[in-house]
Length: 109
Image (cartoon, rainbow, N blue to C red; front, side):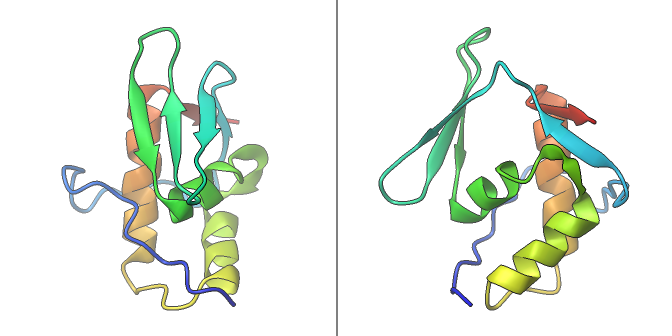
């Protein structure tokens, strides 16, 4: 298991937000993922010019938003592949998915 846990949710997300863990998400095909050499990445929306930074855990999650994985499955994969996943990981995942949804970067599959 790799030590890869980082806090990937932003601090300005609503506290207590709960996403449906059974929903499958897919990325907006117009959003560009640019991976950097240090396992971080940038999401770029060519329609708006907006950019959004992802740490390695955010990249791990993004790559599983393929319309086949539920949020619960993504969380299970995080726990299986990362050490030191904190108890607040479900809430952080909810916040992260909520932010991606609000930006139009992902949608329900």
